[in-house]
Image 1 (tube, one colour):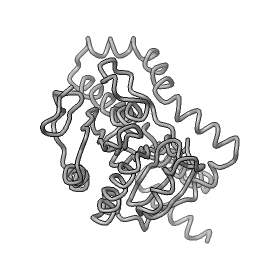
Image 2 (cartoon, rainbow, N blue to C red):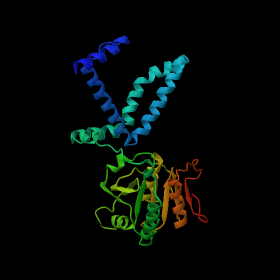
Image 3 (cartoon, rainbow, N blue to C red):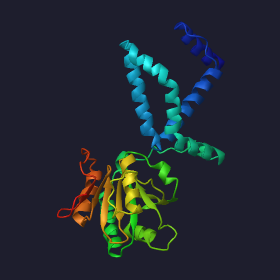
Image 4 (cartoon, one colour):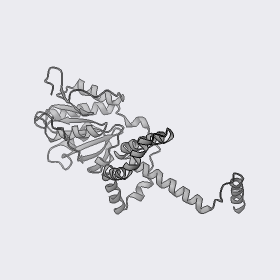
Length: 291
């Protein structure tokens, strides 16, 4: 073993590199392992999107340094302290959750969770899931049972999953109807679906802060709209008062949908079609009033 290590050291000596010891290799492995799992942990939540935005800014600053754009570099140098504070503000929910996990000693367990067998295509809605969602939505609508179903897309919703109760079950009409049945333990809050599975129920969602929301819309619709403003998820909303089925997506609510319209919206998410932002804030189906 000593001979092998001596050979490795002599190889690096040929490149005029400093002596590398076993402790150096061990430190490199530990640091790489920690960085990997920190990035993996960030990717489970919305912080991953914010982190990519910060990396874009850093790349922009690198270009400014290469081109010697002194004014931009001067502004960046004087704003770095404000930027550090802003980072702590932006990542405050994720940092709070990390400390909470550390206090409950779950972070070590999470470090050893790998999902190498997860297929990327499984993230998107299957035809069976769409069929079950459409059937469930109008079954709940006929019974005037309120429902809030969030369909995760590319933006991870881990921070909102953590506010509810883990389920991890196949999407079926029977399961969803039972979850939203009145006076049951899981009926209050939102259901989050990811990779064609019901991940969690009774999840809390952020309410939209917009002032131009139609006054007819209650808390359930405002929550569905709120989550659509901070992620690329699509939310099915069933009104408890009227039984009407709506969709919230990209900051827009599509109200009073029929089965065909709902299926078309879900198919849009399934096919990963990206559309430009809508001009109108709330839309009704054809023949209805636009708000």
